[in-house]
Length: 247
Image (cartoon, rainbow, N blue to C red; front, side, top):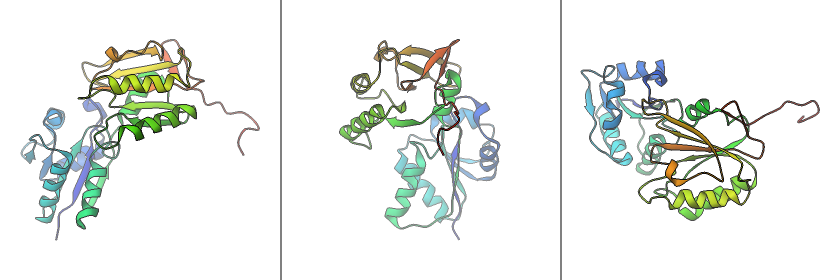
């Protein structure tokens, strides 16, 4: 009989964002696979457990978790944020499908980085929005640009994950150029770096003033739509309920 795999999100940064369900699952599994950078956040919860925390790719973490489960052990793979949003869950389920392996799996959601950033900024996600990752490791850059164009054209608030990486500033510069084709330079932009950590930095600027120098590998951006405004240091995207609108 195989063990069960838990894909656990621990939210961004602070321990305050780790859910009770995540803590409970971590306390009950004998094996935990986790990136070294996250280890300190849950060290007290996983004391005495078998821990695999070497630098591994998502596929390698998946392989090790499946091997543990097929050996009859319950095992957890820990992700920052939510495991289903640009994280391990997609890789894990795709691996099972390709290899035609069946093991019990439970996804334990975590507080998404976008939600954390939005709370720090005010209410920029008050209406329809599109989340787009600028990391081109898994998606062709031409496809990412096409999605940016579509989101900008249809006036979605745009959340940009991974705006800067090993390829440098080029992708955020191109993204800004695309958005500027449909948004005013005065459009509010929220910049959140290291959300909920001790080095947290929160800024509100405009699309016209957005600079690649404001962005690093731990930054998430939220670009407002045509109705987003700033009041009292808060970024607000309205969603008014009006009589006669809708059904």
